[in-house]
Image 1: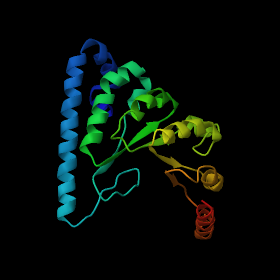
Image 2: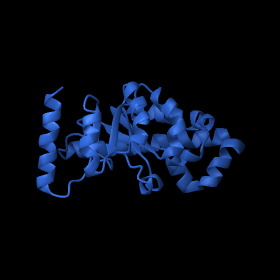
Image 3: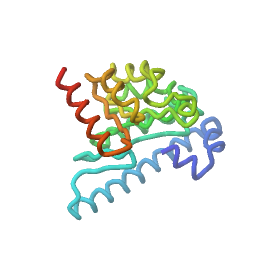
Length: 207
């Protein structure tokens, strides 16, 4: 919602509004939230009328009910205090109006907001994306650097969505084989994909 407002008004002006016109900004957040859900419900009705079952989105996850990935990418510039005042309320509301929701945690700049997100009971999971800068340093989703972050998410009974480089996928699955994680990867060939699936089945049989 705030990403939409920042795109329309400008990021700098939106941040200044938090100090200069907080109530007007909160009204705008409410209005955009209502329009968002009105559009969602309309599209959902059309899909159901045309025989489509379930929903999907840019995160490439299918769900038999209403779901959508929620995000506030601009919040990497917010303090936890501003996040709590301007982002947390509408994220919580959107979670309650959908059957399922996963938050798109985009980059280290959003990690300070994780504690608040984990308090939202209606939020089902977190998708972690380190960002291009971290990935260029070798700190992709398969890097042990993020394991404490994953552990925190999982310990709070949230699902985890990560995209792991193919060469790191097997070791990652072995490390987190008992947890509720959606691992996305891309195999170089069908043969290698089938081999990974067989290895995964062997690992799960050992549980």
